[in-house]
Amino acid sequence: MGGSDFNQIYSPMVHDITFRLMLIIKILWQLDSYLFDVETAFLLGDLEGIEIYMKLPLGMEGDPRVDCVQLLKTIYGLTQSSRAFFKLWADTMEKLGFKQSPADPCLFCRGYGATMLILCIYVDDGYVLGKKPEILKFFEQLRAVDMKITTEESTNDYLSCEVKFNEEGTKAWLGQPHLIKKLEKTFGDQVSSLKNYKTPGTPGASIVRPKEDDEVLTAEKQFVFQSGTGMLLYLVKHSRPDISNAVRELTKVMDKATDKHMQEMLRIVKHVLDTKELGLKIEPKVRNTLIWTMIMWSDSDWGGDKDNRLSVSGMALFVCGVLVAWRSKQQKSVALSSSEAELVAASEAVKEIVFVMQVLNSIGIPVETPVIVRVDNMGAIFMAENASSSVRTRHIDIRWHFTRNLTKDKIIKIVFVKTAENKSDGFTKNVSADTHVRHTPDFVCYKSEMET
Image (cartoon, rainbow, N blue to C red; front, side, top):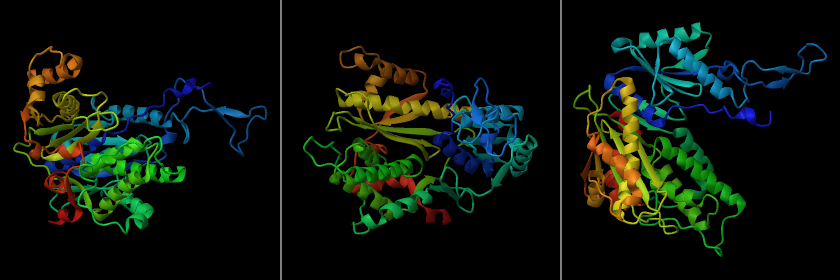
């Protein structure tokens, strides 16, 4: 095969933002929900346009001159299996009357009002919203087309996350208890003697890569550092936005860390274990259930990386008061001014607005426009709203035009906010305890709060 048959292996998976939007829909529309799993999913897909052979399984009788067979269906262990199953799934959903979202290919919708169903698929695990009779009818339709499924009404385990709703179904908590237990098992003894920290990262500190003569970790300890950072990154992805910047700092030395970096990683682990009942807060509030509201907070730390002077972008997007998207990311080019860094951060942030609007529109949910984008730099606001070709802005014209066009079309409206009130400040730097405590309740809450 020479490797040429391994190019068609990509299979989409539902975006984590889409999943959080579905939780908001469940709460606001008071829908029922089920998890389902497609059994032996990777045995269902068809191999098309490719020839793959396998040795005869032990005990299989056949022509003694034949020592291999051609695969017509996918099997487990085949790199094409996931893609083939998703293609089969999408075709099946179309036959059952579902429409695939153009924004997120793993999101499917069918019907209106009492008959409406919304579902997402993550490889072979699905989550479906709707009225219970319609959901059960859908499951029977799947079984009728020879898809064996197991179903569960609770949301205790989806994408290794637990979702707990309060009794009234008006708010929810999303956490990752399985990953917390793994962190505790791996690092519990190493962090047990550390003091309790109010912030995940050392306030005002940033990680600097080691110099040539600095002593770095052994290969064994480096692996432990990488493993711990990887687990923390997965926490950031789903349930702990409050540790985003501190964990991003760790990723700068994934290949070459020192004892000081290891201690910073253990500090974050200690903070996570001390606050292990914290999870993403999902408590939507709307003025009008027919039109949803969005607010984006954007910020940057100009030249914050002492190694290369790259700036850090931070953003927090709230839909109906719920944080659905967040990011702490180093910019790709050096910004020549704080205004430029803020403009680049804002341009990255508004891309998430466009994506979320497209997802909601594919479900039939309109969004109130213009969407407010809060930025704490007047220079960036001016550049985003006004035509200019000065030497200070001409090299960032692409980002500037993208943001300005959205402003001109009244899709977004950039509004000034004081730095102390900017909810995305903690995504750009390790902030003080006061700032961390002030903004954290907007992002996360304790599991026990679902009982009140």
